[in-house]
Image 1 (cartoon, rainbow, N blue to C red):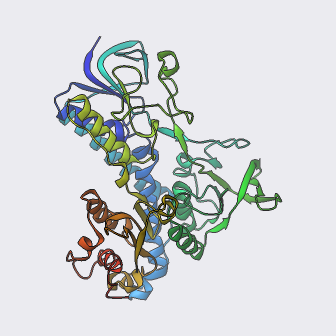
Image 2 (cartoon, rainbow, N blue to C red; image 1 turned 180 degrees about the vertical axis):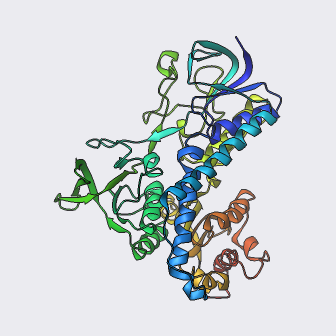
Length: 462
């Protein structure tokens, strides 16, 4: 029987980061992971491979649409799908092997297999029992299912199957207009598929700022994505060479159907805790099937903690990473902390969409007095030079104190630009602080400064 200070269950972004931090803090640490590779859903069948395909498909778009405008005369590019998938796999392999290296460097043991917790202080993997003073559950999440839909990961797929289709489909229906559906729908549209997004609500990207939702949908529609909004999917019938998606429009309960070669079910994710033995252990769960934890990530069972997608909060890799570092510090006797008011969210389409903090809708609901500073990328010289003048930066600040309460960006490099605002919010900065900070010219980041100026006397280039 081996004994550890900490055993982490799951080697996704939350789990592997947590394990490395534990080891750095002097704790003898092991990670239990049943996949053949480390990195969890994110690195193997999620964030990383999808970004590889997003980059490849955007490069194709640039060659087809913008090369000629810049005087680059090339033959029309052809898509070698097998080679593109090989490129994607190479990206995955490089990242997962990198985590193996980090484990060895930090002396973190990898216990290969699937874990269960027979009792507090013990983790069972196969026939072996390992002792641990502290157990951290970082088991992640899995795609949510819809009644009436049978997923085969070949023609009716989740994000996992969508990343490894045998060929580029001629048509695709995406069920759900959230982050995953729009990213992968965007990939296949640019690769030549006819893509229709079917969404239950009347807006895309639920929970995001209203301005962003409207602008983003218009941009995607302009790129060729079709949208059916306010539609409740009833089922998917498999036929020869096609799948038929049936749905009812919520506004009048009328029934409709649409055929597609591939159907992507992108209706969110749910915590994955199967096989851990949490019921028998007596671990308290929330009504939504998440592991209930206190402010220090502890469950109701002494010595058992949980982080990431398995607990409450946004299902984001970086949220899980921050919680992993925080719980490691708590166990080591330090003051681990995560500021949930400053966790950015990013959609990696082209253009990118990024947000942090409050939306206008939330501030209105709270009755908080606020002001809006908004600047269009059409006034940014760098963005216009690369055909990315659509979109905007929007900063929300307290009306009395000017403190930044939230920000929403749709445009070039939005996922990188948002972090300047995150840092400012972490330090409790005012919009004026951003406005008075010199930004290099010409950069996309000048649009952030201009939006901050718009919270005061007004932007310069608008």
